[in-house]
Image (cartoon, rainbow, N blue to C red; front, top):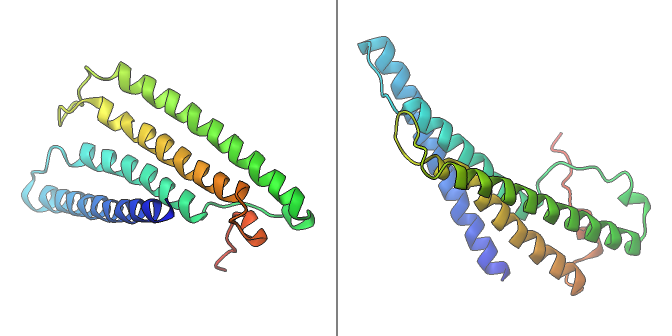
Length: 168
């Protein structure tokens, strides 16, 4: 399962790189076209916005897997292993609940916008809101895997503090 999630997150990383590259080309190309030729790419702004939203949600999945989100360990550093385990389980259950809320809200938006198209590209707006569904399902799967690893005793006590030190 770990290899599958690692491969999935590597693939998401490449998709994020592709989104960023397309955004740079579109925005830079549009600026050059507007100033040099008094024209532009009509779909540039809308597509860049869509790619940015998808890139953000996909990046959230990768960061969740790599445990790269910001956090503090002021309480956890004072607890023993049992307290850390309890906080780990509680935190993961709360995050799973948030994933459920995001999924429920995003799915409602997808359903509402199935027949609505974007103004310029004329694509279904459901694709735009689908990023939340992808994030919620992927995030929940990763959180369940991390929770299962902890409950099965496959995590070191040092891994129970799921934050990284600052680069500074």
